[in-house]
Length: 135
Image (cartoon, rainbow, N blue to C red; front, top):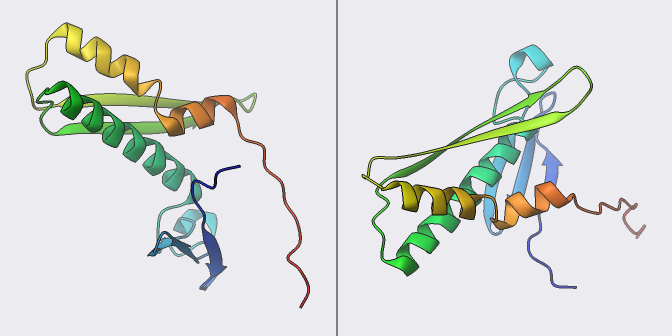
């Protein structure tokens, strides 16, 4: 099995603030004030949307570069919602300051559905949880 990414999350306090170490970067996650946190960083669902949005923007830029297309400053806006039955819905909207014809927009919209993080979210991922080895 090929390792794609890794992260270590540690409490930094107070309350729910946590440090995320990944790929040589340090990020901060927290809950909003209304959720008992101190709003010191994005909440986990915001980080999930950030990951999906970044993957979408990067993949579309890579695709456009390979095709020689100028897609301008492409923006990806995302919203996560839940319904009363517990269903989760993500709405992704693409916008660009470049004048793209309908054919290019259709291709970009199609490619967006095939980005690695999109495919992972749609397929689900097997998650195992274990206790660390006792020293």
